[in-house]
Length: 167
Image (tube, rainbow, N blue to C red; front, top):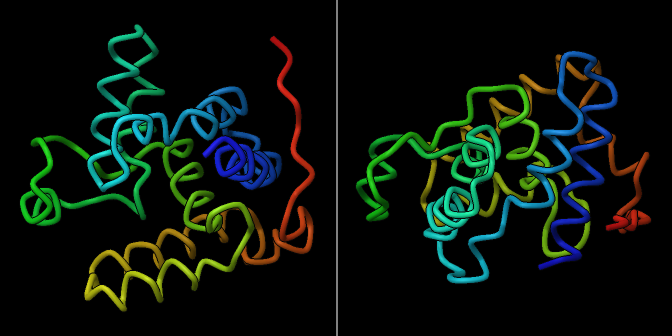
C-alpha cells in the first residue's frame, strides 16, 4: 500500500505541476493519504473509513474530502446506496480531489497505467456509469493539463522513481 500511495503521489504531482491553480501541498498530502482506510478494510468501504480516520486525527476537511471522494471518478447517490456506503458526498468537486482520484485511476497496484485500465475494469464489473465518469474526468483533466494524461507514463515511467519523505 505504501508504494501504491507513493506512485499515486508521483502521478498526481506530475498532473498538478502543469496546473498552476492546483494546491500542490494538498495534492501531495491527499495522494499519500488517499488509501489510509485500507488499514482497516480493503473493500470500497475503505474510502469512507479513511475519511473517518482522517477526521478522528483532526486532519483538514480538505484532506478528509479527498480521501472520501477518491474512488474511481466518484460515486453517485445510486452507487452509494447499491454499495451500502454511509450516506454522504462521494463525488470529487475540487481540482485537488479530481487530481488525486484520477491519479489513483492511473495506478494499478504499483505501476502507472492508461486510464483505460480503470475504465475497462469498471466495465467488466458492469459499472458503466462509473466507467463513463472515469472517462469524463480523464477528458476534463487532460484539457486542463494541456494534453492527454495517458502521456504521463512517458514522463514518470511505468514504475516512477519514488520520493522519500523526510520526517
